[in-house]
Amino acid sequence: MTTAIFWFRQDLRLSDNPGFLAACEDYDQLIPIFIDDNGHLKSQLGEASRAWLHHSLESLNKQLTTFDSELLLFKGVALDVINDICQKTDIDAVIWNRCYEPEAIERDSNIKAALKAQSIHAQSENALLFFEPWQVLKKDGTPYRVYTPYWRQVAQLGLEQPPVSTPSKIPTLPTASLSNVTLKSLDLLPNKPWPADMLSYWKIGELAAQNTLTEFLARSGGVDYKNKRDLPAVVGTSQLSPHLHFGEISPRQIVWQTLQETPLHELDGGTETFIKEVIWREFAYYIMYHFPDTQHEAMYPQFKNFPWLEDVSENLEKWQKGQTGYPIIDAGMRELYATGWMHNRVRMIVASFLCKNLLINWQLGEAWFRDILVDADLASNTLGWQWSSGCGADASPYFRVFNPVTQSKKFDKEGEYIRRWVPELKDLDNKSIHEPWLASSVVRSRLDYPEPMVDLAATRLRALDAYSHVKKQKELLQEG
Ligand SMILES: Cc1cc2nc3c(=O)[nH]c(=O)nc-3n(C[C@H](O)[C@H](O)[C@H](O)COP(=O)(O)OP(=O)(O)OC[C@H]3O[C@@H](n4cnc5c(N)ncnc54)[C@H](O)[C@@H]3O)c2cc1C
Image (cartoon, rainbow, N blue to C red; front, side):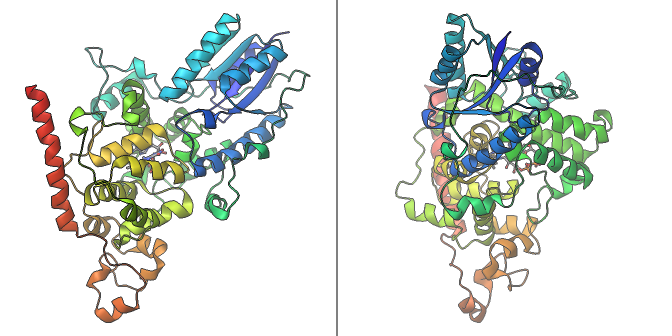
C-alpha cells in the first residue's frame, strides 16, 4: 500500500492540476493537505486575500468530499508540519505544484532536501504557468526585461495546450487521524464587517471560476475586449484575477477555452489582446523569478536613493480613503475598498498619482493594494507598481505622468463610473463630474466633497524634477 501527501498551495482546484492528478493516479492512499504557513512567510497575505482563502478552502473541501476525500488543514512552519505527518504515517511521496515567490522557492528547496534525506520521494509539477521561467530566454541565454519579445517567444513556443484531465477517483485517506485544525481555527476571516461585505461581490472557488470564464466568453468578452477593457464603468474584462491568484483556474484552461471559440490563427484583435494580458501575468512571474530583488527594490540601480517624500502619512491616508478631490482617483480607491478589486485602467491612474503627483514611494501603494486586493499577487502587484512608477521591467517612462482629469474624460466620458463610486457627485453634469472645482460656487457649496489635495501642474513639474535625479544617476553609473 503506497501513500502520498498532496500539498495544495496556489492551485486550489481539482481540474488541470498536474500534481494532484499524478498523486491520484500513482498512489493507493492520498492525504490532501493545506498548510497555513502565512505567519512564517515574510510576504504575508493581506486581509482581503485571507478572507478569500477561507472560502476557497471551504469550496475545495466540498469538492473533495464528493469523492469521499477531505482536505486536512494544518497551521505552522511547512517543513515541521510535513515532517510531523511523515513521522505519524508511512509516507512514500510528497507532491505539490511549484510556486515562484522567492521565499516559497527557498522553503520548497529545504523541504525537498529534508524529504530526500528521509528517502521520501518529493515531486513538483507546474500548474501555475504555461512555461517555466528558465525555459524562455534570449538567444544569449539571459532573461528578457521587455514584454513584446518575451510574448513573441512564448506565443511561438505554443499556448494551445490542452488542460490535463480531472482525476476520476481520489485514493482513500489513511485511517489515522492526522489533524484537528478546523477552517474556523485558521482565523482567516477578520471579525469585522469588512471584508465580509466586500466578498459579497464575489463567488469563490473552482466552479465559480469556471462559470466566470464561461460568462465572460459568452458575453463575447474576448472579442469585445480590446474596445471595452479600458472603460471602468462597464464589465469589459474577465475579473478572473483572484481566481487565477489562488489557482482556482489555470491560465491554460483560460486560453484553451478561449481558443475553442476562436482558433489562434484566426484570432481577432480583441481575443489576442485578452490572451496577451493573461501572458502579462506570466511575464510578472518571470520577472519575479529572474530578478527576485524587485519584490522590494527598483529593478534599475539609478532608482536607488530616489527622492521620495518622507512625511507622507496625511496624503497617503487621503489617497487610501478616496478623499483626494480628484473624482476618478477617489472612485478607484473606493471601488477597491468596497469590492477588493479595481479596474486595471484606474489602477494605473491611481498608482501614477501616488508615485508622481504625491511623490510617495511605490512600496507604500503596493502594500495598501496587497492588503485590500482580493487578487493581491506579489508578482503582478510588484510589476504593476514598478511599471507605474517607472522603475521596473518594461515600465512606463518616468516622464509620463498620467493626468487624472484627462484620463477620466477619455475613459469615463459620461462619468458613470465616478457616479457609481462617488455618489456625492452624481448630480454634476458630464463636464464638471471630472472637475468639480469648475462647477458654480452655488453647486460647489452644496457638495460634500474635498477640494483637490494638490495642484496637478505643479506636482507634475516636481515629479519631473525628482525624476531628473534618475537620469543623472544613470549617467553617473554609465561613466563610473
Ligand atoms: C498598480 C497595479 C497593481 C496591480 N496589482 C495586481 C495584483 O496584485 N494582482 C493581479 O492579478 N494583477 C494586478 N495588476 C494587473 C491588473 O490590473 C489586474 O490583473 C487586472 O485588473 C485584473 O482584472 P481582470 O481579471 O478583469 O483582467 P483581464 O483584463 O480580464 O485579464 C485577464 C488576466 O490577465 C492577467 N492580467 C491582466 N492585466 C495584467 C497586468 N497588467 N499585469 C499582470 N497580469 C495581468 C490577470 O491575471 C487577469 O485576470 C496590477 C496593475 C497595476 C497597474
